[in-house]
Image 1 (spheres, helix red, strand yellow):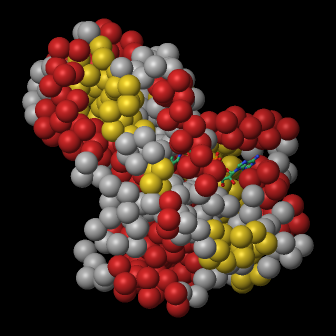
Image 2: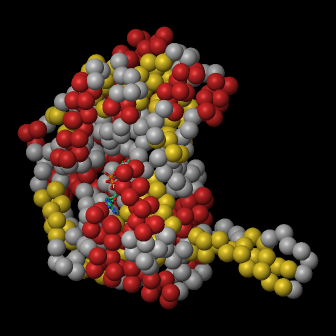
Image 3: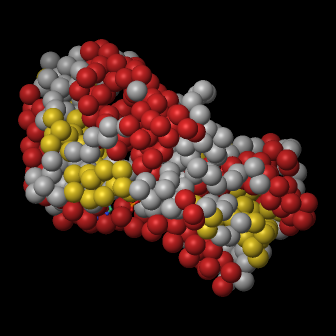
Amino acid sequence: MTTLTRSDWEQRAKTLKIESRAFVQGEYSDASAGATFDCISPVDGRVLAQVASCDQADADRAVKAARAAFESGAWSRLAPAKRKAVMIRFADLLKENAEELALLETLDMGKPISDALGIDVPAAANALRWNGEAIDKIYDEVAATPHHELGLVTREPVGVVAAIVPWNFPLLMSCWKLGPALASGNSVILKPSEKSPLTAIRVARLALDAGIPAGVFNVLPGYGHTVGKALALHMDVDTLVFTGSTRIAKQLMIYAGESNMKRVWLEAGGKSPNIVFADAPDLQAAAESAASAIAFNQGEVCTAGSRLLVERSIKDRFLPLVIEALKGWKAGNPLDPATNVGALVDTQQMDTVLSYIEAGHADGATLVAGGKRTLEETGGTYVEPTIFDGVTNAMKIAREEIFGPVLSVIAFDDVEDAIRIANDTPYGLAAAVWTANLSKAHLTAKALRAGSVWVNQYDGGDMTAPFGGFKQSGNGRDKSLHAFDKYTELKATWIKL
Ligand code: NAD
């Protein structure tokens, strides 16, 4: 994918110019109060930049700019085909700047550069392009009215959208929101995580260069409890879209209720079951998949296959295959193109993950792989991919989202048992089923309370399929045409003929 070596990337990292200010009304600016926070790289612990720490005053100025831009119609009333052309240009600019964006992402949150360049940036560009391409192909409706009436059912952009996103796929999660939000004519204020603000800040300029008018797309870096809360409570934000933890998702619903009843769409946490039946068609493939499902992106994935449910009759045969497969996932410097497990996003997250490993021991689970911090001498925050066997679904490591590379292996006895354990969680984001029996695959998939179910694979999907959660994993869907539901209001217009 890239011919650049680790030392090429390190050289580029040294000379990289990092923009760290907010972006409002088509310009970069400091936070109103002049405050900043340190942006620390988990790769080696060094300070990358002092980033604008926005607050209420910044939220006010960004919402004002976004509202004025929306009312002007420069974007909101532009012909869909013209918005499409701009969105495609925006996507192209992401691709043209892929190496810079990938480097920013890796330095900022620790993911392997090969993933940032090979997965995150292309997928983010594709989200912009796909939604742009869709927007002049979606038709409104005419209602089935009596002869002397005409009923038009039309979709309109909601207005001002605040998008609050997490740090695990900073650019991609942003673009899953930006694609449909901008394509459908809204103005957007993006609030990246304080742990990974750099790519959001950079793409603001690319959006402007692509032709998105000033004020239509704004970026406010800063903390959740300051600028995030200010946006969530703002009386002039029409819709709040969020990806992040279930705890904060619940808080945002309260903020909406306390303010203007803005629409709130939530993509939240997960504790996804990966069910391997004894009749799985290929145990080796299932084992490799189970390893990547917990180690990819350092396990910092909302759909991580963090509960591996294995039919008891094959567990002793299957677990060694998973342990062996996980040996291929090794923490290393994320700027090395050969690395497939990078650094955890920061010290706080590393400590959280290590505390769950402690909890696994304390609850009586058996550690069979990993279990420790590693590469401490680098100054970065690395944890070995870890497996606990002998886990019960009542243990803390099986109930709570760890958001790190820690796998819980749980044995089950039959289909009913597997489904009961799989669904015994507050979450419902994703699940996988491995079996060669077609009926069993379908019946199990139907019984699973999850927004995505994979059969004989883990983590399939693309822009054509909706993505989101049941239960406390959220509401609404990102990706696919269904995502436009979040960003448009339905209007019925009745005309007397
Ligand atoms: P988080 O909830 O701590 O933070 C997410 C965002 O919310 C950040 O930008 C943060 O600054 C902001 N925030 C925090 N407190 C706030 C407040 N009081 N008001 C407004 N905004 C506030 O989550 P995180 O640690 O950044 O991300 C990890 C979580 O994201 C995990 O739970 C993971 O499962 C989830 N996630 C879900 C999906 C999905 O599509 N369902 C995708 C990726 C990540």
